Length: 340
Figure 1 (cartoon, rainbow, N blue to C red):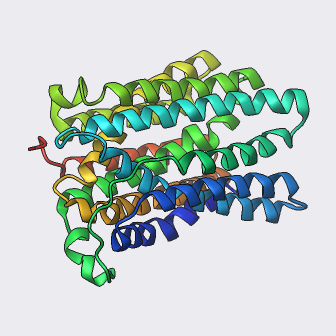
Figure 2 (tube, rainbow, N blue to C red):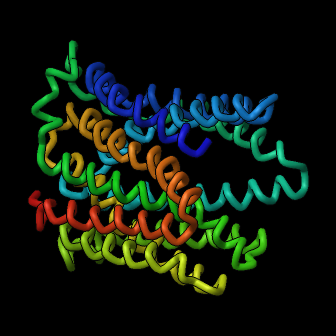
C-alpha cells in the first residue's frame, strides 16, 4: 500500500510535466489532482477489500503528481532569483498541512471511527477542487507538440540530474524510516499511539520550519552543495543510530534532527531542479525531478521491507543509512552556489 503511492508518481509525474509545458498550463492539473485526492478518500472509505485500498493509494499517488504543477506555478509568483525561498515557503505550508491532517485524522478516528478520516479526505479533496478554480495563473508560451525526445536537452541538464538522484536517495531513506518502519520499531520500545502521533508531528514540524528558513540560513552560509551534503550526512548518522535506540525519547531527538535536515535539503534541491531552465520548460524539469525521487518513495518500503523481513530491524535501518550515505556522495556533484 505504501509503495503504490510512490509507484503512481513514478509513472505519471514526468508525463504530466511534459504535457503541462506542451499546453502552457499548470492550473488544470492542480484542479484534477485535488479532485483525485477526493476520489481516493472516497474509495478508501468504501473499500471492500485490501486490494481496493491499494487501488485507492494508487489514485492518491496520481493526485500527488499535481505537486509538479503546484511547485512550478507557485515559484512563478516570486521574483527571479528567489526560487529557493518560494520552494521553502510552499514546503512549509505542505508540511504544516500534513502535520495538521495527521492530527485531525487521528482525532476523527478516535471519535467517529476508522472510516471518518477517509470521508474527511474526500470532503477536503472536493473543497480543494473548488478553491483551486480561483487560483491565478499567468499563461506561459505553449510548446505545441512536445515529446520526450524533444526534451532531451532539458533532461540532460547536469544540475537537474544530480539533484534528482540525491532527492531519490533521500526519499528512499525517509520512506523507509520516518514514513515507513520507524513506527513499528517505536512500538517495540514501548511507544504508545500518542507517542507515534507525536513522532510524526515532530518530524513534519521540524521539516516545515527548516524549509522556511533554508533560503535565509543554510543556503547563504553553506551554498547549495554543502547545505545538502551536511543535511544528508546528519540523516545518514541518524538513520544508522535508530536501531540502537533503547528509549522512545531517543527516537524523538533523532526524528527532530532528521526532520530539520530533510526540511533544509528538500527546497534547495527543488530550486536546483529548475535552476537555469526556461519558464516554458520548468514543468518538464520538475516532472523529471519528482518522477526520479518517486522511485525512492516506491523502492524504499519495498526493498527495505524485504531486508527487514529477512535480517531484522538493525539491518533494515543500516541498509537505509547506506543509501543515505550514497546521497551525500551524489550531493557533491551539485553546484557550490546559485547564480542569478
